[in-house]
Image 1: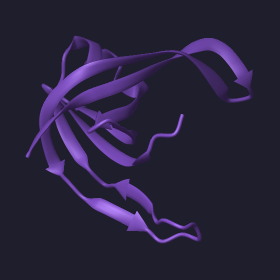
Image 2 (image 1 turned 180 degrees about the vertical axis):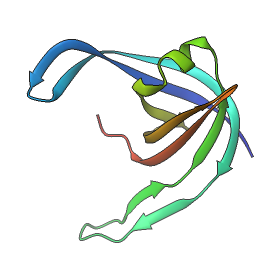
Image 3 (image 1 turned 135 degrees about the vertical axis):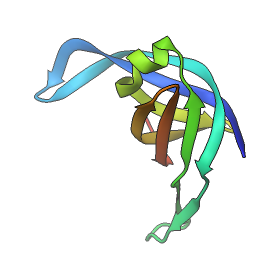
Image 4 (image 1 turned 120 degrees about the horizontal axis):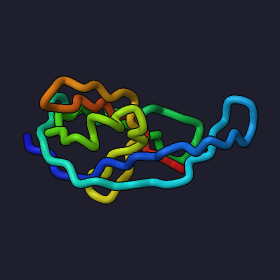
Length: 106
């Protein structure tokens, strides 16, 4: 299955807001294309009215020099207007392998 969306990068500044907490000065979104390696939807029962929804998707996107140089700053991926947390990003030249988790709430 094909993937087309945006990847959000959060570049941290040199200022520490609290011990071990760095302020993100700028978010940059870049278009990305690739394919789903794994496409899984997961609902976690909770004490709330609705269950928590998360995904265990793994996507493989075509990388460019910017994405290879800044892969450690990837914060989220936008799929169908929803931002998803990036759990891990791996450079497997010429691609990036990205694992997604819960909805991004920042």
